[in-house]
Image 1 (cartoon, one colour):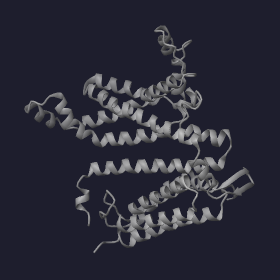
Image 2 (cartoon, chains in turn cyan, purple; image 1 turned 180 degrees about the vertical axis):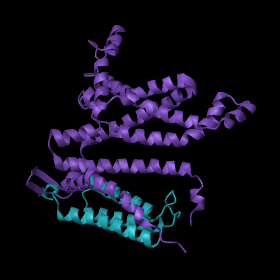
Image 3 (cartoon, each protein chain N blue to C red; image 1 turned 30 degrees about the vertical axis):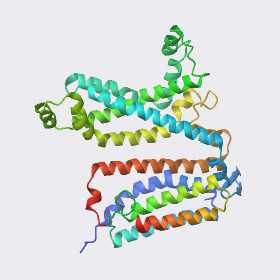
Amino acid sequence: MGWMAWTLPTAIFIALIILAIAVLTVMDVRSPPIMRKGFLPIPTDRGDRFYIAMLGFLAINLTWWGITDISALVGLGISLVWFGIAMRWG
Amino acid sequence: MIKTRNNKAWFLVLPVVISVAFSAIIPLMTVINYSVQDIIGPDQKVFVGLDWFKEVLRDPDLHGAFLRQILFTLVVLAIEIPLGILIALSMPAKGWKASLTLVLIALPLLVPFNVVGTIWQIFGRADIGLGGHFLASLGINYNYATNPLHAWLTVILMDVWHWTPLVALLCYAGLRSIPEGYYQAAKIDGAKAWAVFRFIQFPKLSGVLMIGLLLRFMDSFMIYTEPFVLTGGGPGNATTFLSIYLTKLAVGQFDLGPAAAFSLIYFLIIQVVSFVLYTIIQRNSNPNASKQVAQ
């Protein structure tokens, strides 16, 4: 595994994504997802919202890193707020 | 009461999951790891955090490559989609002529990417190429190796030649699937050719057109081999698109960290645009979906 050049932060990041997918799979089996229409322009189920929220999460962070030198934690905070809003009301 | 589904079928997907894990997921995880480190050698790595992302996102060369890429994609889509529709509309519907036309139209799709680049490289040369020689005989000093405009025209023409057949074949298949009754009804109503296209053919083509648009967007946005063989990204940086820039960064300069960070940004852009197009396809295929969901 040395050739994969693992670091602790990237390992945590990837583990969180894998964990989220695993949790979504378990939830999918236990309670099948229901399509609903929120503020997003399309009807979505739980997995769709997670995917859209993740894309937005990454885009917000990348934009933050690209345009400002203010701490990346602020960008992370904004993206987490977006993530919560998209999952709850998307 | 919802019955528990039989999930044994998921085991049949296992070989694909394993194959994708080795061919895509593990390399992607490696790229994520590389993107936060300065890779000096096989066992020499320094953690740099988000530095590569900041550097790459503020790199004017990358901004240039990105704008060129967007422009290239928009131009080829603006040409290939209408041209593909036009070709499909003018193709014979039945008989040996239809078969012959289909084979001839499909030929460019069978040519490997690097061969396409070589064909157009030779074709455009004034000394040995037919196209270049013809233009020279008209008094046009055509040279894609030194003139950025000529390089762009050649790359666009090459892509249009290579990929318009895909759009044409998709549209042709879409046109053939329209029931004859629609045309008969239009004939009874005295509809002109434009009205038939506007109200029957185009709406029925929208599904395949979106698939064509999605495929052509992804392909044109990742274009590498043809312009690399033709111009090598030049003259200057005139035809340095994102993939060429990425390759220069990763293989030419061996800057694996910035190249990895850039790859992830590139991946995200393609994900976002493909998702938007895919959503439009889904909405077109089931326009009443939003009315059927739980509020």
